[in-house]
Length: 284
Ligand code: SAM
Image (cartoon, rainbow, N blue to C red):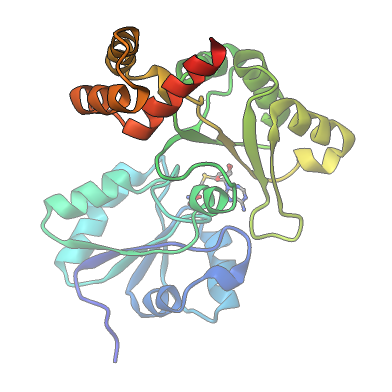
């Protein structure tokens, strides 16, 4: 029995290369809904045909999203169920659909995600860069001066940051990144994810540029660039704890006791402060 609800918009993720990444739930949803909205009907028709899905396709792209959204709301009002897909990956992630989702919500209908492939998440999961916090910039500007300004604003960011780049600009973009962050900054270069010539390489910007210079194929395809955030020296962070520690040691308080008092008073870690005090003693 179908689980598809009437008058509901399903946001369905599709593969970013490997067709086997279309989930069973996505196939069922696309097979059962009344209408499938997509960016390019010819492109999506091929995906549907591969899975023998006979969906009724309607185009929804950046240029017609506003007009189309009111019609989609009318279809929902008449009880139809709708799916939204993009050319690849998760709709709304650097793809159309945000305006539509808001119209549908305002009209009081449910919006249900059918999750699956998404280039940033796939790239990040295999990058080896910290993933506990990250920032996604989307596509960076095409013009070099604007792009450099964006990189400049992210230069001191402490967490991993990520952007999408097109094959026409990848080399210039990485050269700009090098000129703003320096060639030694670690990045992860993810290319053609889930496809035959997938490359995922974590290295300095200068080494990635060298890789692209040595092998021209590395400049082709689709890219996710992940940049390691700046490494903050945590020992410098709690200046109050360090000052108190110095004061106590100058007063000949034993190191362990001094570290304990400074940690308690300044909300820091006793062991970290003790190690710091020991390192001062070794330098004497
Ligand atoms: N909605 C998509 C998603 O969920 O990832 C992103 C759509 S955005 C218009 C297209 C960009 O995503 C590409 O230019 C590239 O930067 C990135 N991308 C998509 N597929 C990719 C892949 N297989 N490998 C690497 N990057 C990919």
